[in-house]
Amino acid sequence: MNKHLFSVLIAVMAFQGCKKADKDCRIPAEYLDSEISVSIERLEIPFFENLDLERVVELLETYPEFADQYLMMGDFESKEELAGEIVTIHQNEGMQELYEEVKNHFDEITKIEQDLQLAFQAIHFHYPDFVPPKVYTYVSGFSSDLFITEDIIVIGLDYFLPPDHRFQPPEIPVYIAKRYEENHLVPTLITALSSKYNQTDLKDNSLLAEMIFYGKSYHFTKTMMPCTPDEYIIGYSSSEITASYANEEMIWAHFIENELLFETNPFEIRKYTGEAPFTDEISPDAPGRLGRWIGWNIVDDYREQNAMSLPELMSQPSAREIFRQSGYRPR
View 1: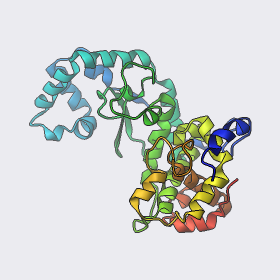
View 2: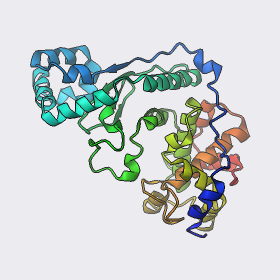
View 3: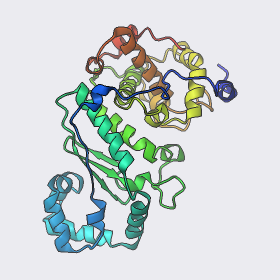
View 4: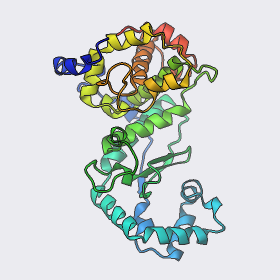
């Protein structure tokens, strides 16, 4: 395979459509019929303004799940000890500056709230037993971007400041940091929630199993957020997605010719599904995690070929069966 074909074909394919076009999308009416509602509570405000020990203790008592699960109150001798540490940290000049920047940039979070509500309504349609967790925002001091449990979600808004902002998450490579952007926030959160429904065969340690796991995760998110561009789900730029489709046949040939699908060496698997700025084994111009992207295409074809519900797809643990029944062929 010509390793430089990616850069050559980007211009050629720039005006051609991709399989997952979003311009004609619509939110299914059955999603909108759900009575699920989301209200995000902005805890950074009470936890950063007018701080004193008594006020913070009251906040810990008012938000027990947040205190216990996120702030790990059980690791402290008392509420007062934790409250004292919070007051000390949040009165720090740097933390106050970071809080002010978050407050100014995220003066309102209507779009985040609306996107999350639509996604939760979609999950509830497909999984009627779904109970939305409480959702909070916070300023973590770059200690936690998204904290997710069955009961609560905490969004560290400091991670999602603009990429040109003077406050940036430390020690995060640029190719990852570009995904810490508001448009990626809710899709990333929904992808994380998908793991609850993503049944897998724990005995299968192959590259194919990893590819299918991620493919099911992205398919889940796209189903819940059908009008969200793929770039915000997988974290590629639009040109990277275009080039990947343009080269899909050659990408697939690389996997087949090198007999990679049933590879179990974790170091080899990481080359195709792990975080990286590019997939050098295929091309220095190819985006990283191409195995995940191919897995997404396989899963899309599997569901389309077999006319199944989303829960049926997500509950299929066999990556080999999904691949076999997908009839996958590069476009």
